[in-house]
Length: 96
Image (cartoon, rainbow, N blue to C red; front, top):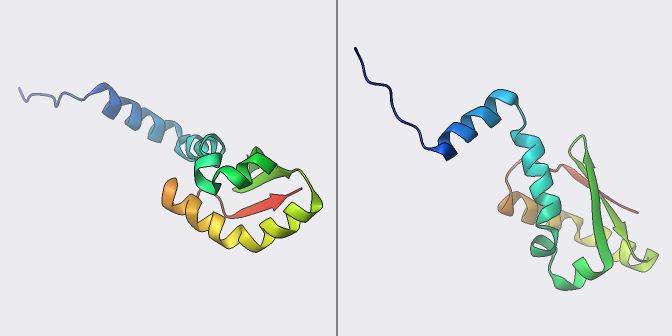
């Protein structure tokens, strides 16, 4: 009889997450959870991440002038999300 490899709890949970196909959803939630770390204190004071739908992150912004400013920062924010959370988690950001 062969011996079964003993898995840690973390390894077992990772396997279950992959089997259930919810890894992407968990990573999308992590983007919302780590928003202030991703964008920094100044931007996080004037924004609120609301939801992710079809890999699009929706962010509520305190004013139209900040919305305009953030449109210029969008490529950098998407890059920071990729560095912090992973690739293909968020493909676009909508500021409203």
